[in-house]
Length: 526
Image (cartoon, rainbow, N blue to C red):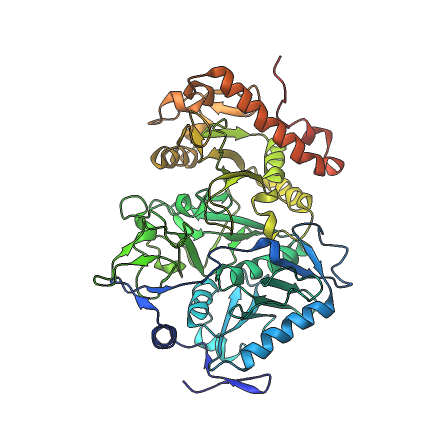
């Protein structure tokens, strides 16, 4: 392919190469394989999940007072960032081949940014060609300089002797120079989450809520949002054959409605099958990228149940590979907002209706369980609180996002639901995971408005409203205590989780109203 970009004194050999060319490079230069369905298989090496503890944000005069500094947004000096960037540039300049991918982030052109990815691996290039919004040929001709540049030098290691860099992995973001530098990890998800973090900072300045959620739209134009960390079901549950997918992971909510940040999807594939997740299963073909899966070499068949490399097996593909998607990926104001949580204690109901104050409380709390494989070192579900259901990507204080959410929920009269995709009948190891078919039935009932017409029971610990019945869902699983053999053990677990909520929320109490604090669960039952 004819070179088209001069970068740091050398030419980039492959500028927005065709998918077929990326396949060729991946196979001939990197030794990757193709499945019998035509998808490309790639491996991310040692890191098979994100490394959030290695993310750093550069301290700059314009952003220093905006950022929620702490153990999520960790400070890095300009000098240390420049050292990281020099390591990346020196590595990239001396590689045999360089690839540049240009694309957009944000379907609403009022808030869209131009991004350029500089990398050496065809795997990374195909991933971002799938995940960014692909420009037309005319747009590429006039693309010009990007708003943001991602230097993916993840094949080479960071230097822990650099001040602020603690390991050989580093993901550093500089809002002043508008650059992201990746070292010491080849996990592709770091690139897309870097862009997401950028938008999470920029959009609230314009009154737009940046959200870690999926979204879809019904045939009547009604939209719904699904919040949740990886593994809670937001990709699976938003892939509905009766609704059109707007996006599976990252969205903005403006005064005009919602819009996807991305041009593709990044779905977990562990245990995926045609029967359980047909929409995603059929999106895996030529142009799709399978990450860290195991394939039978003689047949080209992927064993989606094989977790020997990682449980965090993934597939990225353009959103129009989904049989039911909406392009452009924008929608109106949502009718339903769904918080997905994976409750490892087995005490939250499969579905509950929330007041606005409860919605604020649960959104700021962001309770779920990290699922095995999503992050390095997580081997089994672990209870965690992640503000806004995505604290690792939030740059402002969580109350900034929560206040924007409450404002939009009230203004547009959205219904808010808490849906537990975790355990019932006992905690993890004793109880059982709520069957996906029941969760799907509950989601269908929400979308059809059926739960707005039923009666409710108030949970005495969490104060949330549990529907007395949901068509085609066993009544006994709707109320968590009814699933436990030992009711006293259930109550002890419920109070244990309630106390965890309250303890976690102490960090936000100074910014909370009396009404918001009143939405907290009860930590003792008379």
